[in-house]
Amino acid sequence: MNRSLRLFLIVTAMAALAIVSILISACASNAQPTPTPTRTPRPAGATPAATAPPAVVVPSPTHTPAPTNTRAASPTVPPTPSAVPSATATATPPARAANANPLTGLPVSDPKVLVRRPLFVAVGNDPEARAVHYGFTEADLVYEYIMEGRAVTRFTLAFLANESERIGPLRSGRLVNFHLTPQYGGALAVSGAQGQINWFLTFKMAAPYLNVDLDDPSQVKYAYNIWGLAPSKDLEYLTRLWTSTDRLRRWLSDKKAEQDPKLVGFTFSETAPAGAPAKSASIPFPAAVTWTYDPTSGRYLRSMGGAAHKDGASGKQLSAANVIIQTVAHEKTEYWEDAISTSIRIVTVGEGPVTILRDGVAIKGTWRAGDTTMPEFFDPAGKPIALKPGNSWFELVAPETAVTIQ
Image (cartoon, rainbow, N blue to C red):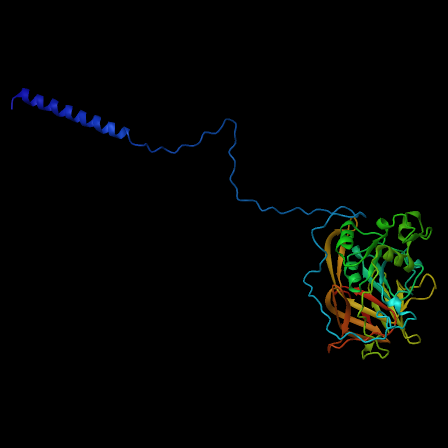
């Protein structure tokens, strides 16, 4: 092949390759390009946000405001005892005469007084009040319980058959009254209450409720004042406010809340059950309580802080036919009664240990009570424990309380 022909073939081949290259480029230009990942530009001055796992929010503890005697807004936690079984009556209702007081077993001259609500009244036990305690002798029942701070106790007196012209000093209500009052179909009278507790007593308690500070602010209709009983003016609030059964019955009448609670009543017997000797009992409350058996009267005499606890009207030492030492749960709450102490929920619903003192003997057993049923007492064999006819004092103690009986 001559030189001219060889050159022609080379040029032709190169031209063909160029045409093929152009065609390939044209086809590639019609395909969708695959973008290369790029970092999103950050605006000038911006700081990248750190990515973190979701936070677990732990609410900070809050301090409930100091007590206010107002109709407080609805609290979020009801005063219901935790893990307490519902109690049901297991004993046959005790038989009694139509004129027998279901709370004391004693006869009354007018049976009509037994078909009305028991009156429950909160009474103070501050040192300034102890010399002027009135109404205790006439009360069918007296409950004593520890207060917040555990520096003093308070009483709730119950009146059904007897009348009392002077009861007090009247003090504020506590959570323990929330259960006690409906258990007897009663009505509760107090001088006031911490805001949240007042809400419970007003709107949730299954019983009529008189807050004298709010419902009788002039304190001339359902209560009255006696001044000058405290050692100083700044302590007058501990001793000035009083009430009577007549005034409280008037309140129930005005409220149209009087009714027959149809009380089942306690079991009573003149004969004491078998029990261990019990000449005295000591309860380590702040003002140490001692009950000493008096064989002459067949009753227990009460001392407090080493001195005889006396009735303000008669000057006589207070006494009881029955002393009922009822062991109940004492639970912490979030309700601030003052700047340093929260209210104690004392649980009288359910069941627990009980020791009953009567006629110089101590009978151990079990108490049972429902939301609206009176407490019942059973011996280890499951038989009802009979009380002695007469008044009863209940000492509500925590499980860890070391009660000494001799």
